[in-house]
Image 1: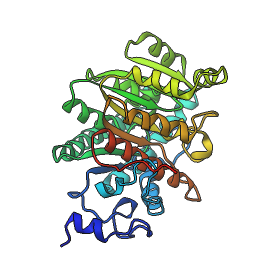
Image 2: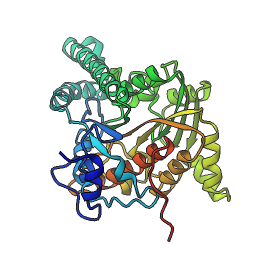
Image 3: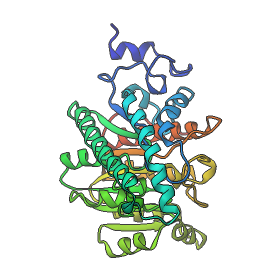
Length: 358
């Protein structure tokens, strides 16, 4: 059997990725890879557009077309990136529970009180318990790979999926902040009665005492409850899309804005990237699109600046990629994920090579 060094010598990164290999067509095993991607194909509580449970598979399929000579991280591929096996039972459970959730959502939209409807109330409790179980299983899986010295990235699924991941990080770090890219605050308390709703992920996350700071970037859709919580909480600092754009229109550079954002972060930082933080043309099929957003270049510029800062990146999740009839959403997701892998590796002292300058 070939060693990792032999695989690097014999692998041609300029050719199409190996179809029978892991993500990005790389030839390495999980043991040989520095970065492990954990896919979570889950979208139980979506209340608008659907399809995010198909995101990990769409990104995997599109990854084989990504050129491995990254402008900023040309040696990244040599570190090894491996996608963990997608649990078939998670996909099955997601679909089963989503079927139970839709009548609950419809009843709420019709002004009915779910607590007075015994079947719907029971199904709501079933969903909450199943999501809690998912979080526990995910936490165990993340801990498994961290214990092996791997850098772990979560790939959703909807935005409810990273909570177990954050709990695993909390078990390994006394305190950390989250740099949260999103169109939405996700600070609703048990949205639509679902404790682990995609719209409640950051509300649930800031309950963890280890999470000392939540910096939200690109926000452009929120309710009164979320706004009040953000204003009153010392943990939360929000940079709305309107605020960021207004400053740029008035002459402030993106570089200065990024520096201000990074300065607010504590030493340890996890990145949570909801794809709808970007302009919709990058992710036309994401579930809850909102006009406005960041450009791909704005986002990757900030991520690269964070990688070169004195902050330590301890985790990353990418969520809410939903494929359409073409491969565009998966393509953008795969390329953003590759950049995130480079940011994670470089920030943690792994050799990603010297950036290419033309």
